[in-house]
Length: 225
Length: 225
DNA sequence: TGTACATCAGTGAACGCGCGTTCACTGATGTAC
DNA sequence: TGTACATCAGTGAACGCGCGTTCACTGATGTAC
Image 1 (cartoon, helix red, strand yellow):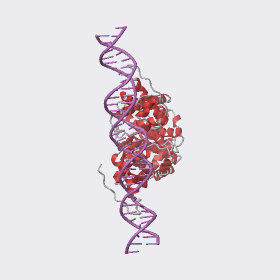
Image 2 (cartoon, helix red, strand yellow; image 1 turned 180 degrees about the vertical axis):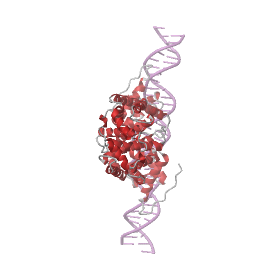
Image 3 (tube, helix red, strand yellow; image 1 turned 30 degrees about the vertical axis):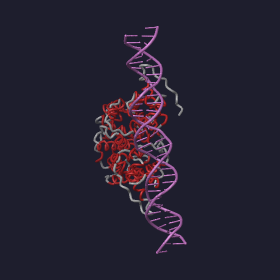
Image 4 (cartoon, chains in turn green, blue, yellow, orange; image 1 turned 180 degrees about the horizontal axis):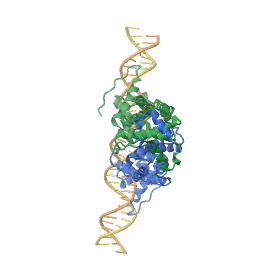
């Protein structure tokens, strides 16, 4: 509680410095408290060592601050995913590693993930924020590479949205219910990601499998082994 | 706002009636406002036509009321999923229809879904509430039937958790971001569910596929067609 | 070199709001004698 | 049959809390003349 250090006033012309400090404080509060609600303007101001109204010098209102947090989170997520993709032995493996990195990021930064991707959002701006984010763009590009390599078939955007759903599924469950009796996390994450990758590979070339009698489907699958 | 109808006092011995009315009011508030925050004790009391402290006659505190809502939601979800399963042409198709029903339920009752499955929960009781719910139990049983039929291989509980992740993924995305430019919802839902089903079928019998050189994997997959 | 003035970075105190919860209470209905 | 009493279902008023936001203000630093 005793974060009561008073921040020295910025030099003339350097007023913008406070903006960065406020943003950082909001991010850090999320990490340290693990509580979305802990990010009140009062808490942020106290952590920076500044009065509450000062925040309004740099953010129109609380939502504007949270929007800035979102951008920051997406940037960090993009960094993690791109780094992971580079480790892949091929484009499919790279995609797999991106999926794992995505979920790991959520687990490591649960409240950041929650604020960005588990909150309800109604306005139109937020959609752009996600869909037009570098992270999403890079991910779609990787999916396209898999299409080009012949692993997947179909529209990369559509496929990416399905893969995203699977990754978000594990991520969101782990973030929302950290104390469930999950399987060992790394295994669980890897298996869901594998399921999704295999599922897209298979379903994108067998769209009609719903009509197959079950024994025939089983026979086909067993032939693969 | 003018829900100000006053509720007549229950007859002697029928005090428990109020409990049901309060619970129903909480459920209805979620449906009508589409806002988790709209469920305040004051709002619930007003809707029932009763004073706020009356709620404490039947629920220890607000959390107890929300827990009761959760149970109600799981019961409703179970009904939907079991009904859907009956329509399947075989066990695999039944599982697919359960997945679709699950996501549809979330889309139709977004705030109920959010309260139960997208909120952070720390205590141990809630885990039991989900895992021991009839809905989850029945779902695992269906997965086991698929294992018995030879579509999947492995431990039904573990497989169920992976399938759940995929279904939760679409559900949670649609609930959190209803205004995103999603593909047509029914298509999106069906495709994610199909991806998951196919993915489990395939990955549960090809655990080693990560080590396959990419061209070989592609060749194998193409042979299926 | 001195002084009036503008700008900039920030503050203190208060606003009204809705929330969960508590406490002492009311008033009708049944029961015992 | 009449009356005292217990029980039951509920109420009114208040508690303290933390929240986002606003407004008039301060005081140091630079600039113009």
